[in-house]
Amino acid sequence: MDLLQLKYFQTVAKLEHMTKAAQALQIAQPALSVTIARLEEDIGVPLFNRTGRNIVLNEYGQVFLQRVTRSLNELEAGRQEIADLSGSELGYVSVASTFMSKRFCGLLASFAQLYPKVNFHLTQTTDENAKLRLLENEEVDFTFVIKKLEQPGIVCVPLVGKDIFLAVSPFHRLADRCTVSLQELSGEPFVTIKADHSIQEACHALCRKKGFNPNVVCTCDTSQGLINLVAAGFGIAFFPSPNRKKPNIPFVLIKVEDFDYKSFLYLAWREKRYFSKAAIHFREYIIQHITAKNKPAKL
Image (cartoon, rainbow, N blue to C red; front, side, top):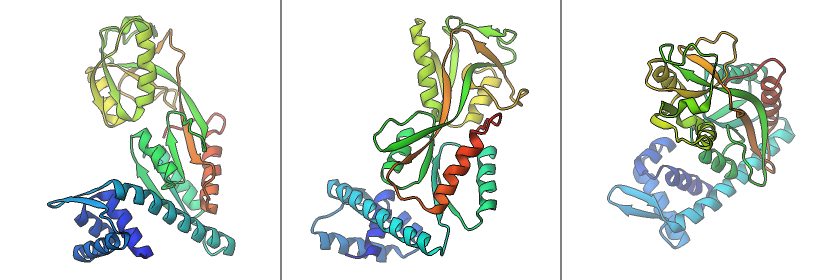
């Protein structure tokens, strides 16, 4: 068993597809298949269930993957720590985020200008549970989440809080109102977004306290989809307050009277993980710039 075998196994285990794994590793598929077969022979049990061209991690493989991931992470942390001590490089930063907006990418670019030797590895996902798994497995240094993580060993720092408004089409019956009560929304069609699941969950819980379940007619993958559907009059939505006083959005925002919920954006990391100099600088930079007074950020 050698390090190359373990790295190859990790890639195959994540993709569960030999051809895609070979392409990702930039090696020939037959060579990858032979390497995995030799690893299984060395361990003494098959690590995958094979059915035709399909390859799925079995119970042995799942246990082994956890150990392999932990070991490779430790080796990389050791390599990075030695590099930091020798001053030979600044390192890289790995981040998981739902958001890849212009503002967020601008923050990354401005940080990169200050530290041009830093490399980024970005993972985009709307699954909050997936972000937690990435942290726990030490596959990323940081993640941005919209629901505070309460797990032991995870640090979760609030960056910015936003009030939640009701978004309606300019032609909606409530569009000329300054305020609205939750009770008035009973029966209205709602549009939601997967990325803001925890926000929608909290808002809908408040609706249920008022005696009704929101009538969700559509769930979007992106915020732009939600914006377009609300603007077209397809439904209404709960929407966080924008950055600017005169936001460039094609719908009307109305204050909800009996509504005390505020959404937060958090930066989370694993407390005992080794951080490169680059990761430490990035954490300080993000916290300083996003939480700066009178400079709210929309990621």
